[in-house]
Image 1 (cartoon, helix red, strand yellow):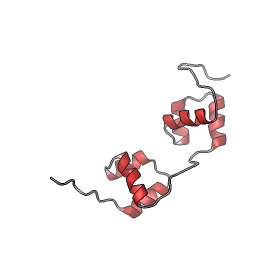
Image 2: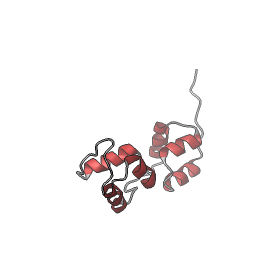
Image 3: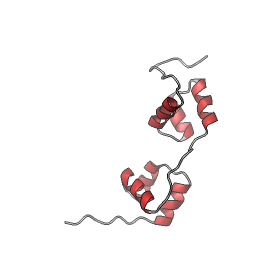
Image 4: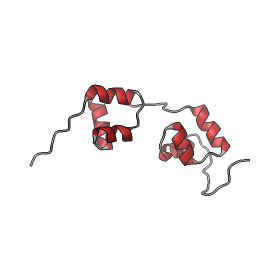
Amino acid sequence: MVRPTIKINTSEFEMMYKNRVSTANIAKHFGISLSTVRLTRIRLNIPTRRGRFDENEFMRLFNLGTSYPEMSEQLGLSQWCIMEIRKRKGLLNRKRGMKKGR
């Protein structure tokens, strides 16, 4: 038995990716997996997205004590990315249930 070939409209894929649609939404739109989105991006020679967020806005939200889920929603990043950026910047971890800064 042969795997079915996935048909993806490449121009639509490129447009969505360049318009910063999340990979999860691209996968959902085309009915493919996240890894297929990544492989398609590589096959089409589309560079990875860097600097997808405003660092000043990240720091403002972090210093206000905004929760990771709220930051994730406002910046358009996953909570994992929020925590990785926090680590990369050397910021202290927040404990669960910690009160917001006053």
